[in-house]
Image (cartoon, helix red, strand yellow):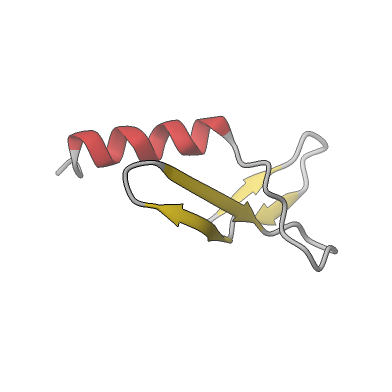
Length: 60
């Protein structure tokens, strides 16, 4: 999976869960090309999509 930056560069969309507290907190770290440390500033769109998926389940 990948995404495009504002200048049209395609970058992989990868990351990991940095902190999880069940039913309370999910901190997602997104990998940034060229940086050793992940960015903890996730995409609201991604988090909203994950919330919707968890609430509704997968679609056929």
